[in-house]
Amino acid sequence: DAGITQSPRYKITETGRQVTLMCHQTWSHSYMFWYRQDLGHGLRLIYYSAAADITDKGEVPDGYVVSRSKTENFPLTLESATRSQTSVYFCASRQYSGAYEQYFGPGTRLTVT
Amino acid sequence: GENVEQHPSTLSVQEGDSAVIKCTYSDSASNYFPWYKQELGKRPQLIIDIRSNVGEKKDQRIAVTLNKTAKHFSLHITETQPEDSAVYFCAASKVGNRDDKIIFGKGTRLHILP
Image (cartoon, rainbow over all chains, first blue to last red; front, side):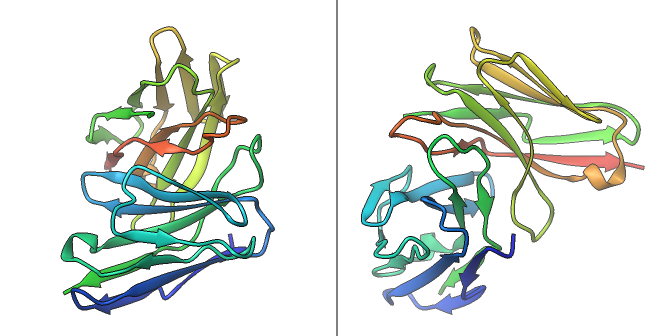
């Protein structure tokens, strides 16, 4: 579990500000994912990436941007934060397509005021 | 896209009794069904999974069953203990497919009553 980290762990920002959440994994896993967790909605997929420079939209991508220039990093950017984006954000990774277990980072609690 | 429904949203059982959580999925191409446990303030962690070529899998007090025809799968916890209190998520995925991503249900909060 120590192989996947997120920063910051807690963040408070104002509406309209740009915020970037970082995700770093040391396993050289091909697949990386961003989820948001809200009460009553479970874990919803925002974006995912099968490899460096390959990204795809998930269930709730609006208002978010991702990039993956290096295999180990998968930052998530909120271009103009809104209160509805207040949530706990989890990054996850998996070794490659065909490998099954997905490992989650510790999460980032984001509050938009 | 894939849609995973999970029931119930909350479940309370007496310590020592069994708990059952049920899920359905919509995409018949899904072939991998993991279950994650999330304790309060912590990250989700895999507790058991089943692949589409298997109907049942057991690991000590935890078992999962899969009915591909009906597109539903269930988690069974026997002899429940206080440490089983947590939120449980079912999920579905098409492993090996280009559209290989895990979609989760909304979760079940399990309370173990003393």
